Image 1: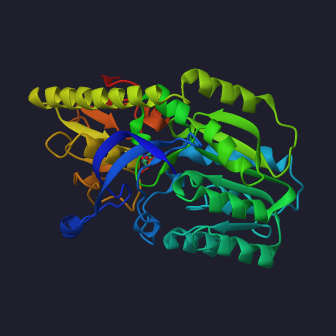
Image 2: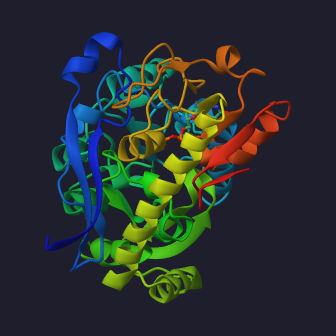
Length: 389
Ligand code: TYD
């Protein structure tokens, strides 16, 4: 790939590796730089972190921790069932804690999940789960053991895989001639519009545009037939793909046109984005510094991968944020990657002593605001601009 660098987010740790104090000394850091691939227009990291460093048996991110995501997958499953044959064969790549597959029957559904802790959970629930990374070799084995698949789904996983060519090539092999492959990941257009640079971290080596996906998928005989713009994860695209030229709907051209108008084909757009990211950093640090100078207690809401990027890029540690609250049992009692802010359960940390809560999980702000309607303090966000809500 011939990449041109446009953004430097500095030294970053593994975004989802929450640590105990004993781990501080050996913590792994890498240099997070982002570039544009001139051939495909793919926005991608200049260098990739090795997958097992991120996805292993201690993986802490649980998809089912938000009602928004649980509902999102159950509604989508219901709508898919209405267009698929009842006995259709389903494969999910990157099944996490089963938040999607739990909506499907165990007999016809298989899953791939490299994080052993989650693969164990879904296997115990009765869904055959391969605890491996998606590779050409695994695709061949699945083909041999189960035959072709009618529906392949993958949420927030395709953008995790550095080698897209091998990934899509092997999906094309396993997908039935009349099958549908649907995947969803954060949208590059939305990241640029919202200045949400925190979508970028080790696990997201690529931030997808429809433009780049269109070019890359086509190399493997895969064609985008429909694009849905969804609000989840701060703005995602759900991409519908088939192995032959099936009825392409106008959402594909609409999205390609919109991306052109937004400037995703121009290097200058990415340079302007990098300038906005630098401004977001200084605005956030200034705001938090003023809060602290005023004697306010500031916490963070949601120990997200996104906040790992923000806190490390902006050097925000316990001098500015007292602690982070998070509902995930795997993260509680530990410290945030890189800047080592304690993570505690919301029941212990959200009370009337808190003046401000930075929204690490700004993508769930509606769900959070509804849940915290009696919260005494005010929320802070950096998306799309740094401000107190
Ligand atoms: P998410 O935004 O999906 O994180 P990432 O940037 O890692 O993809 O995750 C939301 C995190 O916030 C997750 O750890 C659960 C937590 N959370 C709460 O603590 N309270 C809430 O009300 C919600 C919705 C999420």
